[in-house]
Image (cartoon, rainbow, N blue to C red; front, side):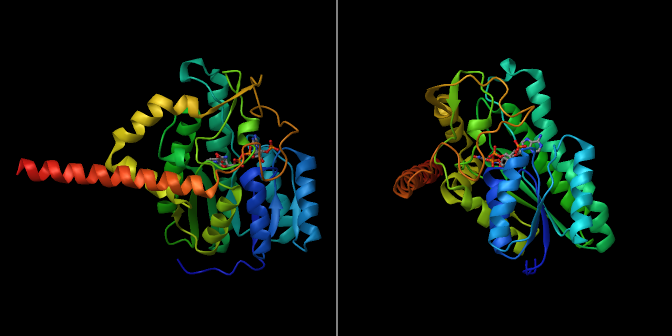
Length: 327
Ligand SMILES: NC(=O)c1ccc[n+]([C@@H]2O[C@H](COP(=O)([O-])OP(=O)(O)OC[C@H]3O[C@@H](n4cnc5c(N)ncnc54)[C@H](OP(=O)(O)O)[C@@H]3O)[C@@H](O)[C@H]2O)c1
């Protein structure tokens, strides 16, 4: 896991017209990476490209849909034609749809897999021949805390993210010794436009499970991962490492909380009619890194961490006490 200098490297970033993809392109560009950005919204990509160019960061924009093989091949072809190489693939494009599993339209379920899971695989297969020929390359996947965990109303999304992490872990093993690395960033709730883009079956605006982080937390993790590839990064503590430990040690705690309040936690008291969102066609709104729900203030995150730490500490002490009493 040697540290890699990013200066002059070339990255394809998918899902770059908003949110995590946009901000990751900005942060990678600041670290010296030359960019090829892609998504469906042409104007948004052009806006990003011009912003980067103004700052002296080289960038080409190639629009495309990750579910269309011809588009994926075209992005890789244009990147190679322009730069002569590609070193990093940031697989980011993703969608979600809010609804009870048995009430989600079947087309939503298959479309979510086509974008979140097969989209990652299509891009990986398009760059791998080039990576193999050069004996180097890096596939960096934007995953989710729901690649390991679960939430009500997001069953199809969570399933697609679990599948993508499983695929990435297997690919990593296949590529051992080839010089090609695979990394994953497990993203917590961030203040992107995903919630303004997602379809909902409830007539209420969706919101992230709190706490919500600044999208830049993920973009900076992407740069760290690009520098030290081959890792699976969990960039935050409260809705990251602590949740994973808690789920490992006391799975019933998360289950009780999310089962009881998980659905309510994900809806705002704001009526919306969005039966399809951005699943089948891009929607013009929501260009740029940030969305409508601001990040949770630091003091609230610290209080919640202290509360959860006390809960975990209390549980560990109770279990230890019970074990002693049983001896
Ligand atoms: N936001 C969160 O709280 C959160 C939490 C965990 C994980 N994540 C992950 O972070 C990644 C980015 O999400 P985000 O939060 O940045 O949401 P976002 O702002 O909605 O960005 C999603 C991006 O994917 C692109 N996209 C969607 N469908 C596409 C398609 N068929 N073909 C090509 N591009 C497509 C969108 O662009 P166009 O519409 O222009 O195509 C957009 O650029 C996703 O993989 C998501 O699963 C997000």
